[in-house]
Structures are given as C-alpha cells and as structure tokens.
Length: 481
Image (cartoon, rainbow, N blue to C red; front, side, top):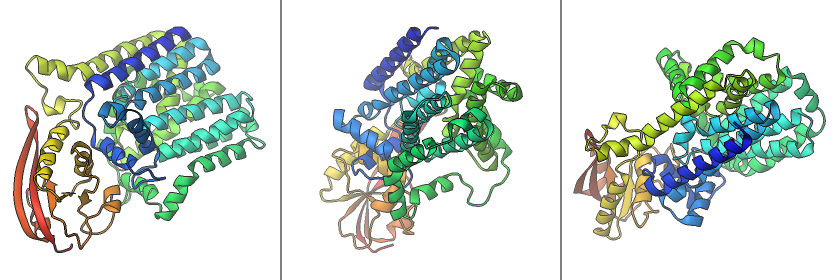
C-alpha cells in the first residue's frame, strides 16, 4: 500500500461516513443530547465532562443547525485527522508503506466505524492523543522547540476533551525512564515549554473546577465505581478483555496480545519500545479496573493509537501484511452488518429484536418528543419535569420548541449530574408541571404536590419485542421536597 492509496482510502471512508450521517443517521444517544444541551450555555466545564465536546457541538450547531447529522458532522473529520497523524508517525518510524497501512488500519477499526456515528468525548481525545504521539516521535528524533509547543498544546486540548489524557503524561514519564534517547532529548527547556503550554490551554477548565469544588474531576473517580473499595470481579474483567476483540478487531487484538508476549524482544528496538510504552500502561490500568470493579469497552480506546502503529508497523516490517489485509476485510464486513443489517432486515419484513440491534439505545426518542410537545401545547404555561438525566436530555432536544427551562427532580439536593446542578426544581415553584416519567410507582414524587392529574400513558414501540413506556402527569402546588 502506498501513501496515495492510503490517503484515497481515508478520504473515501470519511465521505461515506458524512453521507451516511446526512441521509440515515440514528437518533441522538442520550449523552449526545445532553452535550447539545450543554452547548446552548457555553462554559469552561460541566458536571461530568470537560467542555470541549460541548464547544464542538455548539460550533457545528452554529454552522448547519441542530439536526442529528449536523451535530455529528465533525466526528468523521476528526477521525480522518487522527488517521493522518498516525500515518505520519508511522512513516517517520518505519517508512511510507508502514505509515500508509497504519493510517488505513486505524480508519477501519470497528471502534472507529461505530464512533464515527456518535459525538463523544473519545473522538477529540484520540485526535489530540495522536498529535501528542507524533510530537513525541519528532522530539525523539531531535525536532526543535516548535514540537514541544505542539506537545503541550495537544496534551492541554486532550485534557479539555477527556481527563483520560493524563494517561499520556504518565506514558511520557515512563518513556523518559526507559528510553535513553528520549531522556536525552528531554533535557533543557523543552519539557517546561510543553508544561506551560498545556497549563495555558487547560487553565480555564482548571479554574472552573476550582470554583466548583472539582466536581467533574471527582465524577471521574465516582464513575470508576470504586466507592466501596476495589474487589475482585473476574467475570467483569474477562468481559472487558473479550470486548477488546470487538473494539480493536479480532485479528488486530490477537496480534497485539502476541506482541505483548514478545515484549522483551520488541523492547530492544527503540521505535517499538516507544509504541509499547504508549500502548501497554493505559490498557493495563483499564484491565485492572475491569477486574477491580468494571470498565466500559471504550475506556482503553486511546491505547489503540499507538497500538495500531505497533501492530501495523510490526506486520509491515516482518512482511506480514496479510494480517492487515485480513483485518480490513473483516472490519468492512462487520461495518456492513452494523450499518446495513437493521435496515435490510426491516425491509425484508423481519426487523431485528432489541438485543441484536446495534442502535438499540437510539430509537423512540423522536416519537416521544413529538408526543410530549403536543401535551405541552395543550398545557400552556406548564414547565417540563423529568426525574432521570437521560430522559431530561432527550426531551429537551426532541421536544420542539426546545423546553430549555425544563426542571430536574432532585430530592436530596446533592447534584449527581449537570441538570441537578443547574436546573433543579426549586422549592417555591408556582408554575404547573408536566412530569414525564418511567416510574410505575409515582407516590414518592406525587405526594409532594397538591394536585396530580394523569395526562397520558405513552407506549412507543422500538422493536418487535421492546417498547418505551412513559406516564405523563400534570402536577400543581409543589409543597417542597
């Protein structure tokens, strides 16, 4: 594969992804809807995430509107940028052919196919992780001060995307410890230049966290689910490891495990050692997290930036490109099933059951929004109320006009999400409320109001064997929590 072939393949994939988003995008996932809500009130931080995802969605919204395809339009472009950065790093390390294969391999990863349809914090994280890795590659080769500035910029911007970027800094320390050439290059002003640049870029978010008791940083710890202390969870640990065959691809992850087993041999090559250092530590930490509590499949995604380079460059340097070709074919087949399978099955009169639908969590919200919008029109002056974060986000996005003044039920006055922090239903509320809930037992909330009037029961089929079930009530006379 040549560089020209790789660039053409990445451009074609990006075009197809943009076309698919414009013509057949699934509904927004609840987290995406939440980020869109955040984007309507730009800030330097939010309860669960740093601010970059909201800024990106807000920028897309300003350019082409609030349709789901527009909100996600930047995602394939960012993945293309990541692929190009990986291509460049591979070319520097192992030559043009290796770089070309590395770029195409990344663009064809199963995780990238799925991620290209979702506006998530992983997308900018991967881009800036790849930029930081390229900067390290250039610095190790003796590049000038400019690349230290780029390294600091990439780390700072990565932290604005997702705090997992701190893992890159950890691998950078390990590189200085175990790689003599890198350690020699790190002497002088370079590291301080990078540190100052990173702090400048991420400084506004640090200040926001300081003013909000580091709420988003603390949420990262809470999300790790270690509040009760670590405990051995063998099933969840192996479940995470198994999921990586789907995230990275069956052939590639198997090859990666083989390379890990041969780590002592690879360690003698400084280029492979660098890639190991930026692959293994983060992946190992997440595996330990999986066994200690739980780990979502995407939590180790950043390790596959260097991991893709490691596998692709090793295969090319050993004349084993057939494994890369096989992975591309397998991943293309997987993508065809995921993207075309549900529509084809429905067209043939056999829609997929919920458990086999790759978009199972992205169905029914638009219909819900239309039904609730009609109820709000029939109750002028009423304020929307929700009791779950995901429902609140979906309702604000899918109800038109958008009910930005919607309220969140929060009985304990302890914020567990952005809506409880900024849109909590406050004692003294005098307006009537339209409460949309999944709760079968409403006594806990209904008992806090003077009048509770049933309005509707909404059943929204999403699959032959599944539906969304909501109850809608008009609440008046809030007595306080």
